[in-house]
Image (cartoon, helix red, strand yellow):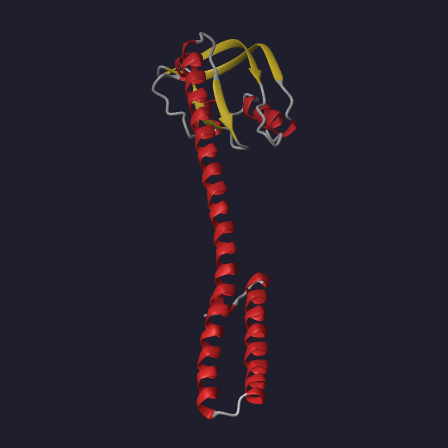
Length: 204
């Protein structure tokens, strides 16, 4: 019931116009007919014609406003549909580009992964990275600290936090790290890069 009673300015404007036309028509037309006509039969006929004329006039006025709003609504729907099509096309194009990029990175001999958010959730890891940390290890969708718990205390997670917060790249040369791979603990010395990625709003 509340929604039915909530009117915007345009709806109030139409209602006021309808009320004014109705009031002017009824009040002045009655006075005019009563002043000009004395014959009761003719007066009754004129009252009937006046009623039909009022219906025609108000119908035309309402049709004009409804049609104008309907045209605006139709144009809005067309624009929304166009925007939705463009968004869908853009999304499909982005997904295709992402798939092509992943296919390329999959064959790259360097270990590459993509992390997202303050928890550094894995969204992608290529074959070389999965071999490095253990091919059977579950990575996608997991935070780095949960996916690689044995790396804790070696400073890598803290570096990730710093890169995410500052948006500045970090490079490491021949850095040792220990990880459980193929059910054994291995120590590696690797060059690595933590490179921040930014969205359209410049957010890391």
